[in-house]
Image 1 (cartoon, rainbow, N blue to C red):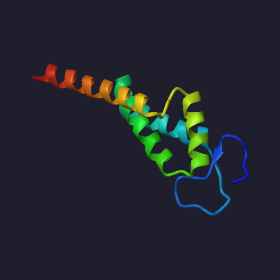
Image 2: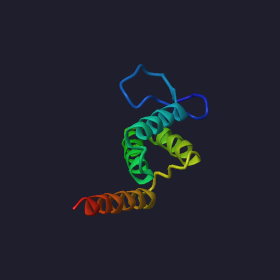
Image 3: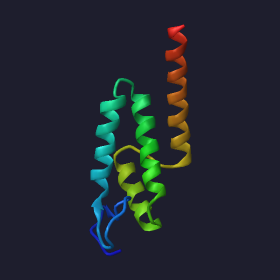
Amino acid sequence: MGKNPGFIAPPWPHLRGDSVSAVSIIERIEKEAGRTYGQHYEIYHYHAMRELQQIQANLSADDADTFMKVAASRGFHLNAEALAASSMAFHKLMHDIWSKRK
């Protein structure tokens, strides 16, 4: 798809040839995760990573590559190792929080 650098086909139903800035999608996810889960970085990061991963999984190979590069430039590395680390940090924090409530 011939488009501007940093743009991808929207990950939702769209007209052929449409494009959207990968940065704008990531910023929306960051803002939503911050508003909803901003009290603890580990929770914010885990939910943002999951949302980014879901979007990336629905993109074409070229768009997924662009999306991953833009996400990495914003500190979100969408590889298995980073996703596992985010998940571990999230689950450890949740365990600690629930342990303190008992």
